Image (cartoon, rainbow, N blue to C red):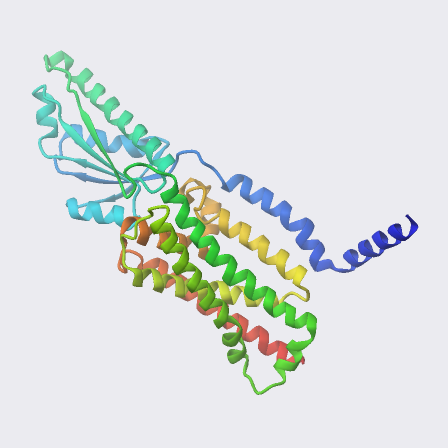
Length: 373
């Protein structure tokens, strides 16, 4: 027992000297708890509503104005025609599209049953069903108010019918929403975590100093270390996408070339961040804890489990610096909605900018390593 006590005491002394590891083990989990407990919220809120009013009457305006007046929906873009309304859904610019046809109020005043279109983005099955239910309730409530206002004039109460369509996931199957997110996680873990661990392993073995004194430039070293893991991540993406399509029946509605462009931009970010984490760590243990801390944040704030729009305003600002959020939108957009290059232009440009910054930072970090060596 005395030998065991000595060994335990020795380990605690080593941990006390390793201040970087202590920060990761104690401070970062508390920070995760504080941030994620507020950010992860499955309540239905901030559902973006795009509208198309082809009737332009008092009743149609009352119905459309009732959506942003609730605590569930927020106003989105107003479309000029049906094609623009469909493109807003396909591009992910809205979660719900409300289409009021011409003659809506006229049919209501005549006692007929006018119909109103509700097109719902069904990629997130649980929220889509609840959002459609709230939207239908708002339509019925406004129809009842209209009927009460017209009762004194002897106008029969209208029976408004809300025609709901769930787009991109008509059966509301949860696997169509979750499987693309798992693909994003696989690519992230392979590219970021494996890259960071590989470089730190060379530090521990002492071979990094030998490499840095060779004629290789820092850029050549960074490209040489990341290229194999990038190719492995691409191969895993192709394998996982094929398996998801054949086994889980996840569709591929968009262009594979847009998906390839998205993953290349994303790999610039993850590989660069993996190298930066390895440059800041002296042991594989430090690198693993550091990368895992950021991976948990990236996953939870990416929209994988919980929609970004459900998060508080400050958490939504944090997601803007999360590259996984943009890649998640690209993968789900290409696979499920058939989004094209024009629809995902903003996400692709953001990832390219982040990738350039991460790779540039990695090159500078290893240039400083070489100068110290």
